[in-house]
Image 1 (cartoon, rainbow, N blue to C red):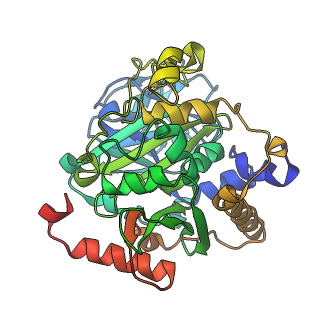
Image 2: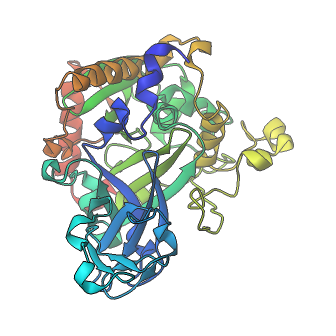
Length: 430
């Protein structure tokens, strides 16, 4: 791997990028995964082996899996009476990591006030357990993404584990030129596509505008519209610190969504998606084998990498159908997420970027890497990362695609299109 990218891909304890990511709230688990007084769940976050549990009162604790006494794993602990008790010697910890009992020591010799499990600040919103792994007193408010603020019943959550580094997963969503090929390569303009996807399929080679923003990076892929005379078809996406992405998966009206690629360790990440009802109402594309959303998951197991694994994976070649690939499907792989999973995992756990030959279509990827390198350099010099202390910057950001005939600055046109979308009645935006 090119040396200049070593630091931005590694997120374990003590690494510069890992410390930067610890300045943000992290979506760690589904709230439904944790029941009161139920056994703990193993979590891998930023290279740390953690356990999560919900106590008798309903409070969630997330802490290092090692008991501070003799380092036996608290995964085997007893979740009882508002605390987790280590089975080795009976030391007990509350959800904040405070030691509240030392069962194998006479009470007069207890020193519970001097023992503390390494525990992290937690919060719950939109059906997700969030964890802040930095200094508690520096924790900002939870990020106010549109899709996270809707009522729980109006938000679809997706957790899918991916066997690759977090950054190559993010870069997969930053790369819009692959959509017309990997996902819609079998499509022809004469097929029953809506107007926006006609524009995508007629011209699979867009040009780009890219700019850095207070929350991260924004790019717009643009091409002349064959369906709107004098129109320009735009696909606008955002990278938001530290690992969030808003790809142009749907029209601006419907693209109320955000997804994260949360590092588990340096070679595994968790896709975490929040999708609103308007996003979920998108029609599947008739006549396009494989061009739909499908997440077939294996049953969860209790090992460190046992959660939210796809049935289609590298061990079974993603169930690729070579005959379908030859005759009717561009990839022979069923499902948009699985197609993305295949190509990013096929690069290896951490891609060797020194082997790449970037093209003009990779400008957003290249600019994002440069921004991450520069942001990390500033962070190491003591400058707080973008949006770490100003989560309100995320509040009204939305990606998506649209067509316009108006001239002018591309960012201003995008902001105007988003504003017009928000002014529409819900029935029209569906």
